[in-house]
Length: 385
Ligand SMILES: NC(=O)c1ccc[n+]([C@@H]2O[C@H](COP(=O)([O-])OP(=O)(O)OC[C@H]3O[C@@H](n4cnc5c(N)ncnc54)[C@H](OP(=O)(O)O)[C@@H]3O)[C@@H](O)[C@H]2O)c1
Image 1: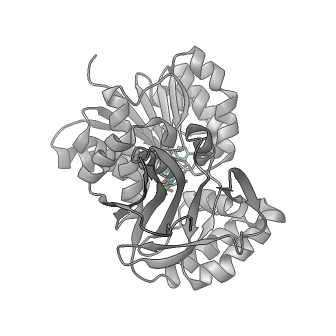
Image 2: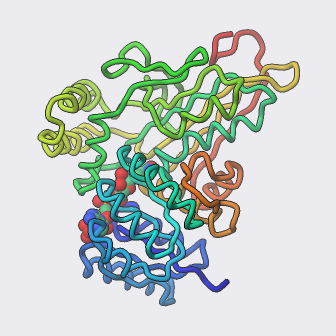
């Protein structure tokens, strides 16, 4: 097989441009970047080619809502990476990828797309295509980290994932901020406890968990947030009594003013409120931001190795959350290109990739990884048993 071509829709956006630069450095592939602004796409492709000293990146026009433009842009590509905030056009874009005969990988934080992709699952399978959804950091890493932790235990009992995000300068005011805000407006609070999924009303007040982050983030109270990729974990690891994904707050203004408003507006005419709420998220994360900046994701787990109970704590950190997202995405793409990460059907990234290989790739692309495994004497600090 010759050098593959990878298409990146939104390849000159905040995350897309990092994905392109990483693929240039770590993968042997031709890249086609596309979006609605052909001049911006061309300019970025030129910069990349000049830096790399090759002509591996080319630019073209595509609009996620227009399947013909997507088919035309990515004709001949082996894989289409969707790095654009176009979750609402998933049907159009995914159908175009199927028509073109290319595989799919998306990083969008947009839960309604999952129902659309599930509706296409039979077609994906029948066509022998590999569709990977929810790749990246969040979604993307939490289930992968639990699967990594599970390899250290004969009996895994508790595995909770925590994350703190704090982009320097706040979240940029781009179209993806609307997608992100809309998700914050509709997210469900829930976690797996005592052997069953529990859902909490409101913003899950009283159900949060505290954890100690390294890298200057300190002790934070985190809110349980349902993620699709976590839902299969109790089935994968039947001894698991507790698992969940917990997110730390941003700053006092966003946590105590913006989040309650987001929750409320998500229940009353959400469409009307998305833009004003996105402005609040923008200003709130910008004006009230304080260091440390970056993103840290942590899994803390406990279970048994033989007769001895052990605890595991693993933390991943990068000072730039967008670059971190791109690194997590590209770690998966590298597995896909090696063949191990390509399986026919529809997959959630966190449930597909090999965790050890992904961690190794992320580390060499610049993510700091800290892991401690130790025997527990006395009461377990994680499950208090
Ligand atoms: N999984 C994770 O951990 C994670 C983390 C961060 C972000 N994300 C997701 O990543 C996606 C991109 O976020 P971002 O912050 O990088 O976005 P961004 O900076 O706003 O960039 C968006 C890119 O997509 C293109 N685009 C927008 N609308 C388009 C359309 N209708 N058709 C074709 N291209 C279009 C834009 O170019 P034009 O405007 O010129 O078309 C731009 O190149 C979002 O869906 C976000 O939810 C996921």
